Image 1 (cartoon, helix red, strand yellow):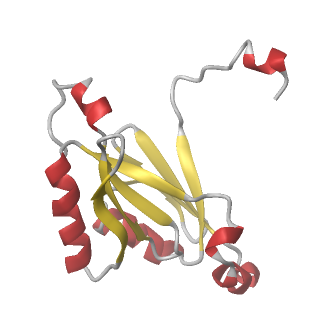
Image 2: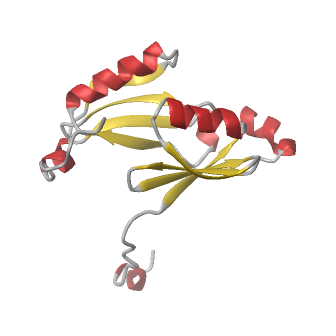
Length: 151
């Protein structure tokens, strides 16, 4: 990056949303609503679904039928997104959510475990193989002790 680009960052107020390409819009929307508790906001049948989690949004975009086979064959290392995370408000919530994920038949790929920075998390995959992290971050949570617990 050029030096002049670093000197004047854009400083957006917040990230607006994350968009994921999905092979089955209905299955993905069901996963994010029923497993992670996201709320449907808007949907264009067969094309896109917008979901909300607090102040953050997730857009699910249906991959065209002619591209689905190639999309499903891609390797984890061939995509630029490594994972995205959802925060919980207490370390114990990580373990509770992990057990709920297991009880729903999903495989936990890593964790729950503690990290060097004091956080605790685990990873599992959505229907299209995207890694999702459930994370407790003590640095952020102690900075906001007045927040109500996530339910």
